Amino acid sequence: MQVNGERFLKDLHALRQFGASGVGKGVVRPAYSGADIAAREWLAGQMDAAGLEPRFDTVGNLFGLAPGRSLLMGSHSDSQPEGGWLDGALGVVMALEIARATQEAGGPAVSVANFQDEEGRFGVTTGSAIWSGQLPLDKADRLTDSAGVTFADARSAMAHLAGEPIDPARFTGFVECHIEQGPWLHEAGQAIGVVTDIVGIRDMTITLEGEQNHAGTTPMHRRRDAFQVLSAFNTALNDRLRNVVTPQSVWTIGHVDLHPGAHSIVPGRVTFSMQWRDGDTGRLKRMEDVIRQTATEVAAERGMALSFSGMLGLEPVAMDRGLRAALGAAAQDLVPGRWREMQSGALHDATNVAALMPAAMMFVPSIGGISHAFAEDTDEADLLTGLEVMARALPDLCKAH
Ligand code: GLV
Ligand code: MN
Ligand code: MN
Image 1: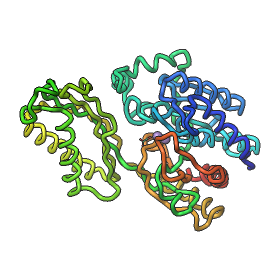
Image 2: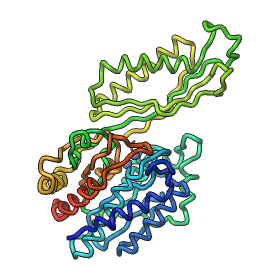
Image 3: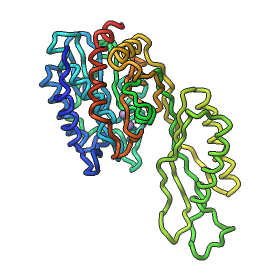
Image 4: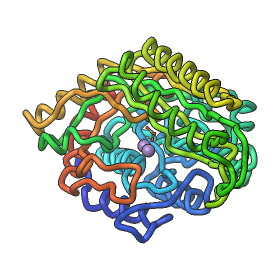
């Protein structure tokens, strides 16, 4: 089977035009935005041209179906609010090229998946969580984004495309190629990562409420300042988490809404995101306990009201051994000494799909380890190596189950 590197890169660059940020190669293509829907419609056209049957499900997951039973490959084409051109897009476009090339060569059947809202505008890997049956649609519909828009409202923008559910039983397994999004492959001069497991995640919103007041007249000792308390919480949390974490554990306060947000007002309320990730379920729980306990103590000390939202999460998931072995053997053939097995600290649709069928992932390097930023990039030579390794692995990926 002969993959066409030029055609693959051309498609990747074409997809980048949907929501191009104008800053580097970055994209702004959040789930259900105009750019996201236009990109999905374009991809459906490419699937059609490749002889696959394009089908959208009720939430905008797009599948390009090969006839009969097939291996499913893919990822997602939605982006973070400020995203890179390869996060998700690489896996979808690589799947398209592999599906085309195998069809041209009369090889094993490959279908393509392009999941919706992997980046979690509404949750965490929302589209594949729904498809895999782990997130009920009625629960998803009640999720809101940071502007208060509900998932139900957002997905109605794609209602005209929605079709019947896609039966997972038609697929023998799932393989996702992705950029690493971390520094290790690039730093080591390696070309390929074969993923052993994907970490778990917990995500919630915390609100601290004190007293809004005048920034000139309110003495410091009388203030119940939401920002000061958030700051104290963050310092205490970093200190206390040290007792339970490993170097692989991560935690992030990525979104802060300080009310009312004016120079001359002592802020009365803060609502902020609290997310943490680790490869061990027990440690995720211990981190949760520390987070809740620290927030409770800091809020009580400063006379603040405290509330926690519901928590979203995904469990750590191991990748399928047979599929992993196929990817590793192909990497060993094509880039001996320049590949490794590694954990994924980023979340991926493969986490959800693994509940339905054997699933595996392959990484290519990210320059400087940068992702979820306009500056995200990968050398084209590494993108092409990834395509060649996947093509080499295909017969074994199809045989593995
Ligand atoms: C997915 O993009 C993640 O946040 O890991
Ligand atoms: Mn991604
Ligand atoms: Mn991402």
